[in-house]
Image (cartoon, rainbow, N blue to C red; front, side):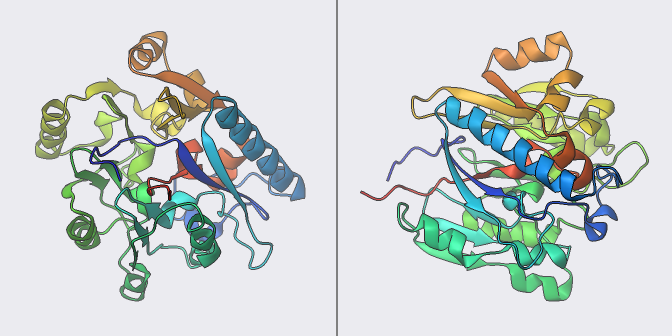
Length: 312
């Protein structure tokens, strides 16, 4: 087991959707979802699978190890393509499962995912936080948590899906320092997940600072980024609504890194932002319009990073 704590991994778990579609339950707190009647058909579900497979192919072509699990047909889980909300895998061998606001989404938690990984990866302990659902207390994995792993910081914008109390509990369990703040969209609605307004790489942070209205909270974020030597790549509210905050830096077996984003997110960036990003890492993008429109999530939500130590 390495003593160095890594920010990026070359091992990514993804779940190929079986019944992808619009989820009425999640739409109440997710301003990114759109109910598109044309897409909300079996054809939409088929398109989502095609978009998923295209993204997997692009990652694999760059040497990223993608562990693909097929979603089960029953029970129907329209958001199964977003596994990062219910499980995280940590470098010390810890696996954590999380409480989720949508009752439908709770069906996504699957023991067989862990059973698959335990063949090749070392799992030291499993911590289940889902019992907090009974009290209406939520923390939706790396949707809620943006983790600076080497610096042990857990950034989180508070919302109905991200409880301050449970953020603090996570930090006790996993040895992180909580950096909570509030973030709102152009309509004043709380941003439902931190990972739509912020993405943290090894040496940079992509963030929509204009959503953080509190001066003290914004100052704290800027202080933490400076303290941890992260170059700030600022995006606008409009770019954020095009999923330009929903990105994930991954690496391949050779250690080359890639900032993975959707084509929509990439097209929303201006040349200077692209230049800023490319000083730090390569860009990899893929078109997932069906998944973004109906699901209200983008590529970061589709990837659960596996930091577990390999056996042998």
